Image (tube, rainbow, N blue to C red; front, side, top):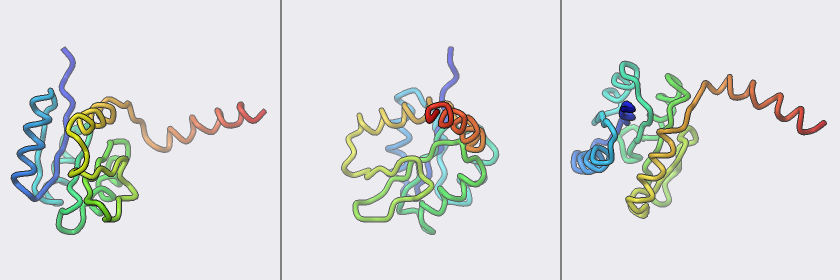
Length: 137
């Protein structure tokens, strides 16, 4: 049996957090919740996490939290839930408008991002460089 993927969900809105947790848990994920940036940072540093979802409405901006978490573990996928018209996080791997994204599409995106094998960005750049040189010759 494969171990469950661990998703850290960060949102200060208790209702939205519980709905997201229920949706992910019923689809086979292990969900860890955090209601603040400080709590999320502590959990993220202590536990193995496969994917992080962050509310863009989080006090202190969710985009800033994504940037901070990417500084700790840059290889972990990050989804920033944003409202239409708000600025997207430059460090997020995906920026999703939660209101207009159907649940099926959201689950598919989470499945793809949580299953993706990620290495460090430094290693990915080293691997990509030789491929570019062989194609150009």
